[in-house]
Length: 319
Image 1 (cartoon, rainbow, N blue to C red):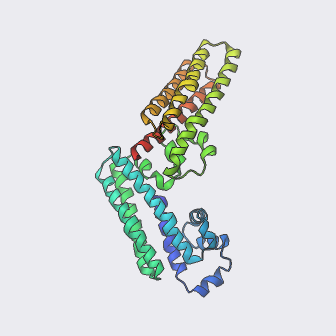
Image 2 (cartoon, rainbow, N blue to C red):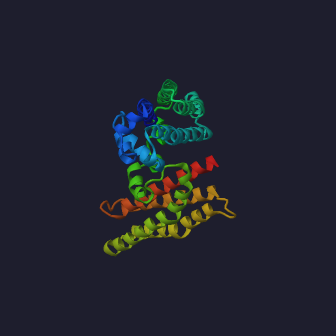
Image 3 (tube, rainbow, N blue to C red):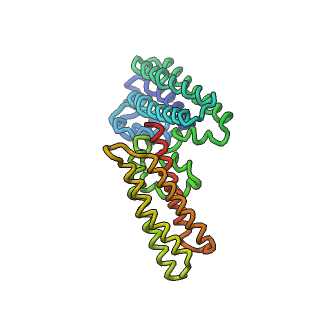
């Protein structure tokens, strides 16, 4: 939500710039391209955020200053507000129902259906005061929502507001025991995945490609370590990871593909739970081998399986 508030502050500055006489804007910004974005964003309180947000929208490269303000409102703010509203609805469906969260759902509906529309109308007719008032109201509603959640959901507010502040990978990894290990494992493969629409594809790729590859690496390390140490506990680990690869991941992948396009989330989740449990059992079995390279790899598999399960649970609630 802090990100939305910052974007709103950026947009308020855009109003002041975009509603200047056209001749002034053209003389100040002769090149209507990325240079215009940088020059205009430099006059806002959050230049880096402004540039980052606008350059993700292809139409920005051809827009004048007023057009950039419209893009910031219609494409950036609206999309992020809708994403947060979806996440709030998800939490409510999952049984998290404090009054503050219910109020947030109402407030975000107002932001999406009233305030952002008010900004759009103000920009179209060059009514600066109307646009600024609508965005001031947005800032107030979002800030009030954030404050209420921090009071009623201490320790959980970061997860509630995360869709505004982080991308999909970070949002998922926050729900694992080690967000750092999770992000290190998934970031390179899924960098740029930011919307809930990406989640289903991500879950299938993790289940059918990422986890099998990581398990194969673990098995290779286990074999090398066994040849070096002859530890019987490593044989137990090898058996666990063969079961993960040959049984549980195949079952989870098949469940996600489903018959006639219908996924079986319950079966997928049960098998991913088995993946995590078997990886944890391996960690416990070789705990005495503190310097073993197997240990961090077992932990990584467990964390990624947990992240995968979180994605699937989220999708199941939304469907």
